[in-house]
Amino acid sequence: MSTLTYTAQRVLVIEDNKTNRELMVYLLNAFGYSTYEAENGRTGVDMARKGHPQLVVCDIQVPELDGYGVIRELKMDETLREIPVVAVTALAMVGDRDRILAAGFDGYIPKPIAPETFVAELEKFLPGGKRALNRDAVVTPESTATAAASPGARDKSSTTQSRGSVVAVDDVPENLEFVRSTLQPSGYAVFTADNVESAVALTREKKPDVLLCELHMQPHSGFDLLDRAKADPALKRIPVIIISSTATGSYDEAECLERGAADFVRRPIEPEALLAEIDKMVRRSEDAAT
Image 1 (cartoon, rainbow, N blue to C red):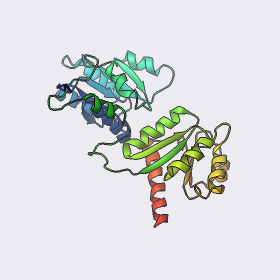
Image 2 (cartoon, helix red, strand yellow):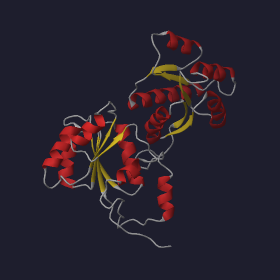
Image 3 (cartoon, one colour):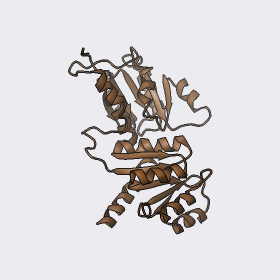
Image 4 (cartoon, rainbow, N blue to C red):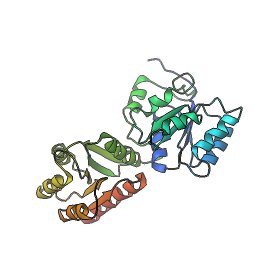
C-alpha cells in the first residue's frame, strides 16, 4: 500500500464559545489539518501575524475585537490580506450574509455547523482546495475514512471516555443538529428521533441516561412522550427534559412537570447551558442509582 507524506495546512479558529471551538478544532484535526485557537479577536489577529495560517475561521461575535474588526485588521496587513477568512456565525437575520461578505470575509457558514459537511465547506477556501500532507504522518485511505466517519468522537487530549448517552427528539432537523454538535464534542453519545414512536423504540434499545424532547411536535407531542415513558417500566426511571421555544406563560412547564418531566427548558439556550443541564441530569441519575 502506498503512503503519502505532506505538510499540514494551518487553520486558525477564532471563537469564544468553548464548545463550538472544540468541535471545529476536532473536525479539522480529524481531517489532517493543523489548528490553533483564539478566544477573542485581538488574540486571533496577533496569532495570525505570528503564525500566518492558510485559513482563518472567525465568529462574528467575539470579545475584545469582533469579527468585523478582525477582518478589517487582516485585510489592512499586506502580509495577511490574501489569507482567506470564513465567518462561522449564528447571525441569521435578513442581510447578515451580504453584510458579512461585503466586510471582506471570503465565506459564510451559519451555526449550528453540520459536522458531516463542515470541513468540506472550508476546503473550498483553502489554497489548493484540500489539506496538505504532514511530513511526520503516514496517511492511508483507511485512516482518512475513519476520521471522516467519526465526527462525534473525541481525541485523547479532550475526553478519554463517554460521559453518557442522550436520546434527542425533535421534528426540526436543525434543532437535532444543535444538540448533536453541542453534546458530542464533550463525550456524549447522541441518538436522534424525529417523532415520539421512533423515540420510544430508540430509548428501549439504547437505554440512554437522558431523554431530551421538544414539546410541540406533530402528530404527537412531548406530553405524549412523557405519558408513554412514565407508563413503561423500562423507561420510567430515565429523566426526561422537555425543551420548547413556543411555550408561553407557566402552563406548559407546570403540565410537563406534573406528568413527570425532570426539567423544563426554554429556547433559545446557549450550548454551555444545555451541556450543564444534561450533566446535571446524568449526575442525578448516578446518585439515584447509588
